[in-house]
Structures are given as structure tokens and as C-alpha cells.
Image (cartoon, rainbow, N blue to C red; front, side, top):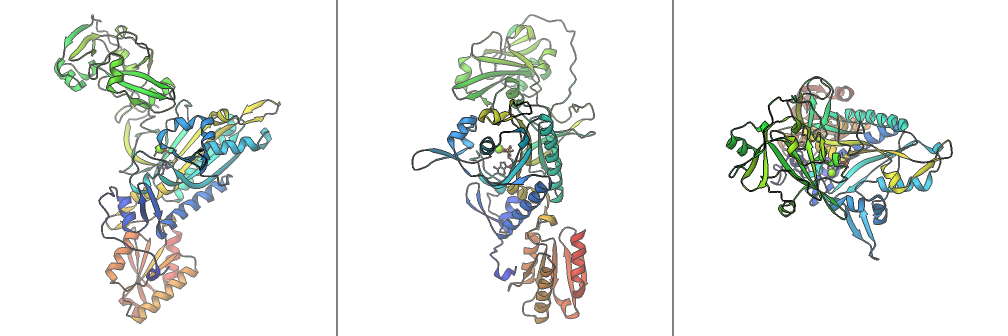
Length: 570
Ligand code: ATP
Ligand code: MG
């Protein structure tokens, strides 16, 4: 590509609404253009990066034995009603109507469609297992689309689905995909970690998220400092020391605690440690035909993990906070809530830590009042479970080391779905004994467009992007420093042709601009190598500069090709 003919317009500064580096750099380097919130055009350089990411993914998925196909974006509501997700997916599902008022969605993911295809075509266990995938534009009406390609409303995903008769077969393919994902991210030159993720009611080792480590990540990862344990905070468990107390149990007593709405205030007012208080969190699950209300109690110095509560009660959607009116219905007073008698329609779950606290303080369901000397026996509850948020400093659940925290960007997610969709949509095969069996499924997602953002978050400096070679839009930028100098122009042209003929993706900066302007663009766009054809051209010498190391080498024109080949092979 000759930059004199390119559709390229770089900017010195990014608009204020771009908050993170990758978004700023992508706008400045003319890689994307926003049409509306969370919806972007991939401009030529950005699109080349996307295609490289897609191709690496394709190559590795094919190598792993998966087959590519392409499913429809437009999907009838009736199919989503069958799976129960027309409701459960909530407002994130983009919905529309056709001219006959029939409802449709724009696919946010394709479990429904692929299961429909499979139930139409597969009937015997002999036709299993197989793994199919697609690379396609997805639609999700995200609550907070932001950070450029990081969280779009229209984005490109690789989604794959595998189908099996037995759990062993699914387990095997899951491991195959886990390895394949690792190879893909390694080839892309990214620093990543595979972490255990929340699996809802399925449990076990049934889900991993692939995280690119970066400060700007939206996810918190807890990992052991001395083993390979790593998990999303939502899912992480940990060990904290719980000791039986031999303190004598006292009768509970009502005390006035004016304005002590928080645990901090309460502990200060009563002059007791937070560990001798218990706090209440009021949650609800929104169901198709109403709500399920949940009160969660935990030791005052700890936090409730709503995902663990969700799993403990078998909820299928994320829990939300109860409103003040809803609390009032159950006589729960925000800041002073407790549970002393069974309330119709309110499910009470107690964290296991509460069992170990003697004579604690807990809200009295009355403004400005708490009970002190409360014990487990004084409480009305339905379930004791681990609903605690693990945190840095806790012991790793495998008993090895202490948990530390890091931030990550989720670029991939693999999941053993089991029979969730095949049951809902009745996808079965006959087994060896002629018995109908639900097909077992795995699903494997990877955010193609988000990977662009993640790669930049991890690879940049104050001047611009530093592309890992494998996903750079081009490998080399040949810069003619002075377009009025015939020798420079001739050498620049020669190198440009020679490199491209040797399959090294090269651009020629033959624009009528100052050399300094061209150098800045080269650094901003982040070509791995910059070749400056300048004053040395008269003596047959050019300057080759490595974007990543900053190392600069004078190379004879005849030796440039070899030099670049060696660089590419490194
Ligand atoms: P998140 O927690 O970030 O919302 P998710 O759990 O909804 O992600 P999946 O449904 O597992 O994501 O989708 C598979 C992959 O698609 C994710 O790992 C991520 O890389 C990518 N992805 C998901 N939502 C978006 C989005 N709004 N914009 C860009 N990429 C996305
Ligand atoms: Mg999401």
C-alpha cells in the first residue's frame, strides 16, 4: 500500500470520550470510526488487524478438527421462546419486528440456532461427536457500551459448538479447545491467563475464561502466588480461618444505635470489631411471573458475592438489589435489617462465617436500633452456604499460597453446556441400545474485535501502538524522508517492491509530508519495522528501526531483505 493513496487520517489527539488507551490510539491511528454508541466501522488498517486475528483463529480451530460454517443473524423469537431465553436474556437482546409483526432477535450468540440445526439433521450417536464454529457479527444491547471495541453493541465473535453422546467425549473436546485457545493467544503474542469462571448451576471445571492481563481490564482475577490456581472473582473461593468460639452465649438485647447505618458506624458506636457484627444484603431474582426475594447475612467485615447467592438458590438470571418498597413489605429496614422470624416469600441465606460468631450485633428491623448478643439460634433462615467474596490476602483454596489480585480483559470463554439446550429444544440421538439420549454440548466463544483492543492495552507506549508481529496491519513501513530527492524515491520504491514480492507486508510512505510527520505516524500506527530512506541513501544505506525495542540499525540497501526476513523469523 502506498500511503499517498491510502484512506488514512491520523490525529494528534483523541476525543475526550475515549477513556482508555486502546480506544484513544485506535481513533488516532484511524483504525475505527464510530457510527453510533458501540457501533463501529473498521477502517482499512483496523480491518487488516481484525482479519489477521480471524485467520489465526481459523487456522487453529481447523487444525483442532472443528469445521467452519455461517449461521443467520436474524433469528425468530419462537426459537428463543423454546429455550426460555426470549425472556431470560433480558434487555441485552436486540429485538425487532418484520412487516407481519412477527418478532425476531439479532443474534447475540447462537446456541439456539445451532441446536435447531442439529436436531433437524442428527439422529444417531454414530453421527457424533463434531465441532462447528463461525466468525460473525453479534448484537448485544449492552447497558454500558464503552471503551471502543472492548464493549460494543455490534461486535465480531468466533463462536463454536461441539456435540457429544457422552460426558467423556465432551470433556475431551473441552480440553482440546482449552489447548487450542492457548495456542491462539500465544500465536497472537498476548500475555494471558486461563481462569476458572462461574458456571452457574453446572459447577465443576466446566468453564474457563481467557484473560489478557491489563490494568484497564474490567474483570478481577484472583490467583495464587504459589500454585496455578486462578479464578474470576465471581467464582473464586478461598480459605479463611474460622475458629469455634467458647464465649458464653448471652440473651439478645435491643439497643439504640442512632444513625449507625453502616457496619463501620455500628462497630464504632458499639466499640466492637466489625467481626462481631453481621450485615444483611437484600436481593431479588426477577422471574417471568414475578420476583423471588432473598435476604443474605454475612459477617460484617466480609462481603456477599451475589453470584454465589444466585448459584446457591438455583437462580437463572443475575440478582438485583431489592427496592426500598420491597424491603418494607417484609419489614426490612435498610441499614437496620435482620431476620428473627420467618417471613412469607422471603428466602434467607446465611454465610457459613456467621456460624462462628458469638454474641454479634445485627439490625433490629427498626430505624436506629440493633440487637446485640445475637447468635445463630436467634435467627430465622432457610440455608447456610458459602456466599462470601474471596479477596486478595485470603489463602488459596488448594491450600497452596496466598491469593493476589490482577485485572484482566476477557477475550475468550469456554463452557461445558451439558444438556441445557438439547433438553430445552429436544435435540436427541439414539444410542447403541436404541435409547433416546439428549446430546451433550460444549460452547466456545472468542471476542475477535475485543482482542484488537486488548492487544493494544497490553502493547503500547507514549507514541502509539506496538503491534505483536502476528497481528500487525503491515510489517514494514518504508519511509521516503524527502520526496524531492530522486535517489531516496528510487531506493524507497525498490525496497517497497522487493519486500512485497517476498510476502513481507509493506507500506510505502510516499506522501508529500515532512519526515517528522511520517515518523510520528509510523510509531502511532505501530508497524513493527520502520525503514527510513534518508540522507544515507546517497551511499546506499538506510536506517531500520525496531518499533518494540527502539533499536536502530544502518543497513545496506542490498541487505535489507535479509535483515527483514531474519526479523520476521525471530
Ligand atoms: P462480558 O462479561 O465481557 O460481558 P460475556 O460473558 O457476555 O462477556 P460471552 O457471552 O462469553 O461474553 O462471549 C464470548 C466473548 O465475546 C467474550 O469472551 C468476549 O471476548 C466477547 N464479547 C462479549 N461481549 C462483547 C461486547 N459487548 N463487545 C465485544 N466483545 C464482546
Ligand atoms: Mg456480557
